[in-house]
Length: 242
Image (cartoon, rainbow, N blue to C red; front, side, top):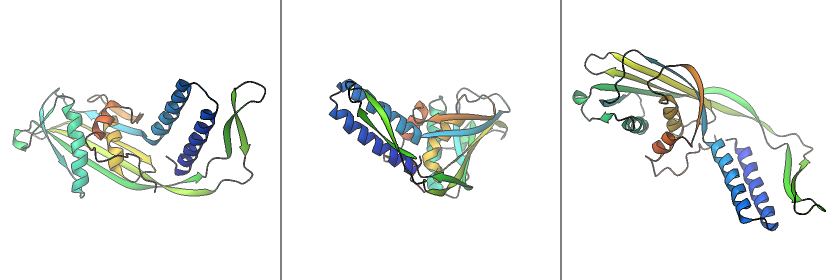
């Protein structure tokens, strides 16, 4: 999420919470309001729109023994993303094995991150707004905008293109069974924090074929939550601002 917008939403939430608490509103109203704001805030921080392409060359088994091969210079990162792929396949009744000789199928995993230009960003907001009670009309609430005279500050942010691809082969004869890829462009430069979203979106409706399908996913997706749960030491999946 845009850091400036993030600070603005945080300040608005604090101010509105203070005003509402002084108006002696019912507790369930205040609780519902805070949950709504929190849901909007979190979903904006953890969403992804990706373009995926998959094709099936032969019949894909419902369950099979498998191994995962990765091609990456970053062994630690490759191990983490491989763990995510393994878990997503476990949930589909596939069984991982340690030895390639025991595997019926081989999954080949690859990923990459590269700069994808820049985008112009303004410093929001154009106006400041607050909640207050309308005098003479009980305790009704309404928005009262106060426009700023100065123009917002403009700056550029680097964009990054993340790509992840999978290839499924039969171990016996290396015949291609299924392959797919997904990519997205975002402000985040760390593919690890985007990997649960990328994998969950790519494996959605597996093994059906997709032809450059543009789809959206967020952190509420059950598979995304399960993949993130593999790393309890990671307390914040939001990408640090760059």
